[in-house]
Amino acid sequence: MDGRRGSPYLCDIRKPIKIEAYMETVKLRNGVEMPQLGYGVYQVSPSECERCVRDAISVGYRMIDTAQAYFNEQNVGNAIRSCGVPRNELFIVTKVWISNAGYERAKASIDESLRKLQTDYIDLLLIHQPFSDYYGTWRAMEEAYKAGKLRAIGVSNFYPDRFIDLAEFSEIPPMVNQVETHVFNQQIEAQQIMQQYGTHIMAWGPFAEGCNNFFSNETLIAVGAKYNKSAAQTALRYLLQRCVIVIPKSVRKERMEQNIDVFDFTLSDEDMQRIRQLDLGHSLFFSHYDPQTVKWLCGYGKSK
Image (tube, rainbow, N blue to C red; front, top):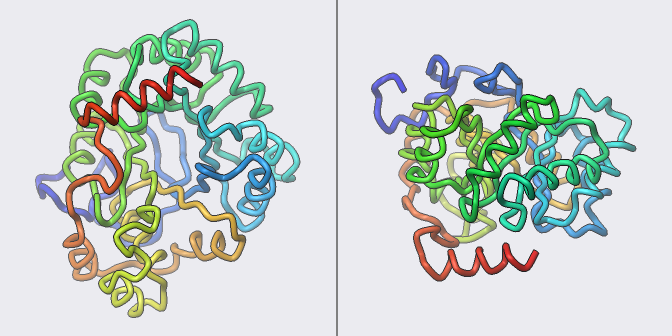
């Protein structure tokens, strides 16, 4: 950060700057270029996933975000193999689930993900949840990274306390942390902490899964109207200008096209500040500090 605590306008974590033009990629700590906007396949059924990923790639997406727990890695692999775009032009993200936590299980699961994705390497591998033996998982990921199986490694759903713990006591700190991030839960303070470790924030649920009347929010609609953009496009643009990596999801090709059409305008400082005021500062879904949520996740992890 450059001292302007809480500013939502900072982007390049190596040298914070105010964004002046669209930004298609971010550079991770190891120099790997990562698309700033991708296509997420959470809750996309295996029967639809292959078609959806091909559609997304056909309209310009080059990053695809999946996970072992989504049960569609194989379908993503089928799509990237048959899409006609060279593998080195795609950026594939997946995640190690709780049931595969620990060094040995994580190591085996990495090879299984590579098999399902039908690729020799994964561009970014994340620990999906901060539970069970995630230190063992991280050691397996560091090893796979050094072996060239992974181009970058990171975490998901790590709140600042667990994130700092792992970052401080690992040889390779996380390069990305994927957390719930949208206009109602903007993760301003968490992003500042990540920046201290050279870690990029990545948003899951950038549309808040439609909660809190997201798509009919008066502020987003009013700001968007100034740029001839929808509430959804305006919300994505806000996150992009804060250097948040986003992975919007839709199974409809026309919505995929709309979601990627966010690089031809820049929100003013005034409009950025208006949207900043929408922040509620908490999750709309669950808390990893809630014992019942943790018990549910751990139980789900054991069953998979």
